[in-house]
Amino acid sequence: MRTVITSMVLIASIALFTSCKGNEQEKPGTQVEQVNKEANVATQEETKPAPPIDHALAEKGEELFKTKGCIACHSIGEGRRTGPDLAGVTERRKLDWIENMILDPDKMLEKDPIARELLATYMVKMTNQNVKPEEAQAIVMYLREKDSQTGEEVEEESEQE
Image 1: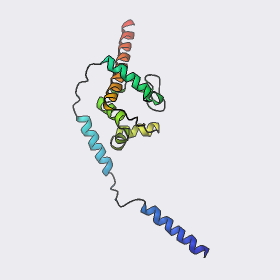
Image 2: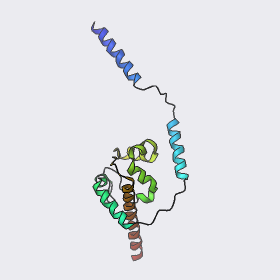
Image 3: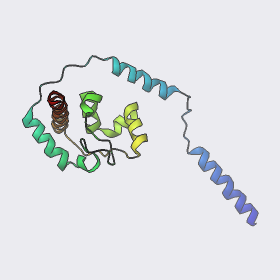
Image 4: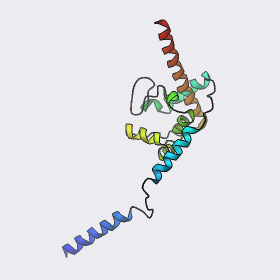
């Protein structure tokens, strides 16, 4: 009797595990190919010039950076924390990409190869802080201002030498 019950449990477990895969048949490379196509299209898009830095908006962005909790995972020029150091981020990434990452990190992880690469590197998923679009723009403006100050400091140092 014990072997019958053990056999039934084993068969039920196998059936459960195989049924969890779902009805969709995976096609190797399909998702990767689609992501690569999207990435290629994104890199080929012309970028519009960034608006001039609005210092009042950047000041609001600095406050949001602190109050929304960005500072808990990110520094600007102080090295890696839980998430990447954001010094120079506006020079490495398109402004729309940064804004989208702030607004909807979950969707970015689904579709964007750079977001997935960051997750693989830092092993922590960026938290959705429910930032409104105008708040995200302010945070991006703050990051732009910080990056422009860093560039100015480098120019001043090279002029002094």
